[in-house]
Length: 553
Image (cartoon, rainbow, N blue to C red; front, side, top):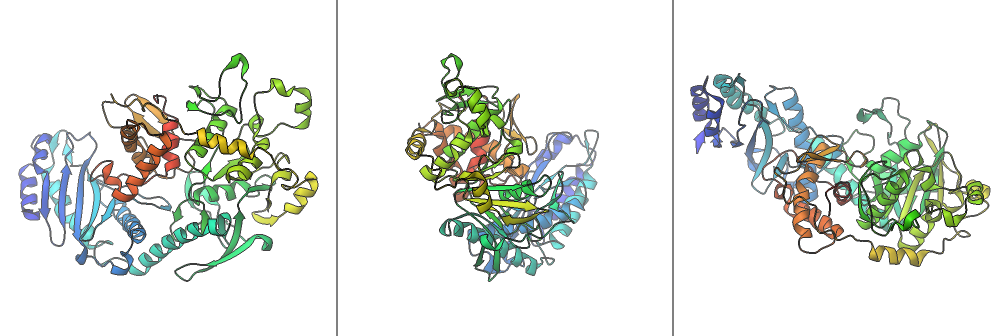
């Protein structure tokens, strides 16, 4: 195998040569304590940067063996190292690139741990003057700066073991609480002392003006995690939960924290122990989205002209049809918790007051509002709902729990809400439980394919909110639980895997679940080997992206 010295000599010899000469560098080079692998060299200075890997023997690191015993621990270790490397790269030469993690602890492809080695995946933009190689500068960067990166980072002596152990314990405790939710009859838990507000709409870091969260005593629950943490906080029970309060008092802030509670967060984020059922899905109205073959008949039926809504497709959905489709897709992928904010919902989909019912004959109204279906969803098939409401009391009598926020402080106002409504869930049972059982049985779609058989290039992400498929785009802005552009990249790559599975006559939901299962067992390299720009998505986000793809057949 070639050495660092030979790489330096080769790069210096290429100084001033045409850029294409760099392709000869592909291969492995041994350094003191690690190996540099150059996997792919960019074709010219303006192409995407080259891909390289640092491969460090595990015994050469300072990683304690006890934090590598389980896959869960390894995911947290990889995430911790990725953050350290991202910080080092951000403060180093601009030619090096690394995917910077957000606030969530995710299964990432940027760092890989095996029984024998630790592998870090970076990009490197070979420096150039025009289209001529700056070989001497490249030699300095790849043989000296890179060696320092390994030496003075978590890969070498600067590993902060205490912080690493806390990172791992935070992640494993989070997963333990998430598994405990169903056993305790809960759908979410918000620990006392949590800091929920964010710095701004453009930053996911905690606000400096946070009011520490404190649960009302009547809804408080306590637990002790495997690491020994004793936590007390708000336990949101299964069923229908309303979050109410005046404007700007923290309703949406609490719901957004619950949305993101499907993922673990880094120590210091403030939401480390905001824990939500793993299959929870946030649903909203989304004017103009594409809908393909979805049964929205529980909410919308009897359209003028006899248009069927049992296999409903449109390239330009309205607010009500898009929200109905979003719920149907969430149920199709197996969600047992819907998260809804009235501010991002279609009013005519959510409610119809008595005055409107009196004015418009029911036989002329194709929409059955969510208020008429939400109770049956829970009683029939166990799908809970957590909903922010601020402008209507229509759901009061249907709710199992009503939480009021006043200056970010929650209180239990369930009894008062039932008193105002003059009823409770016991007296307002929906009676359509059998309907939902039958509906779920027939719900899964079985498309012929995703229509990607002729794409010229593999689909790819363009940031967090867009997936590029040849000249078309999939807009995933409404998937608010998608938190990291690396997840969007993984979804883009996974589309072709789902396409292959659909060729075996399986339902779309099964193809999506099997694909995510493959990522869990075989890891992200099955999507694109040796790439460092991916993070594992949930099945619901993969399903959501596919459902918004206009090419689905």
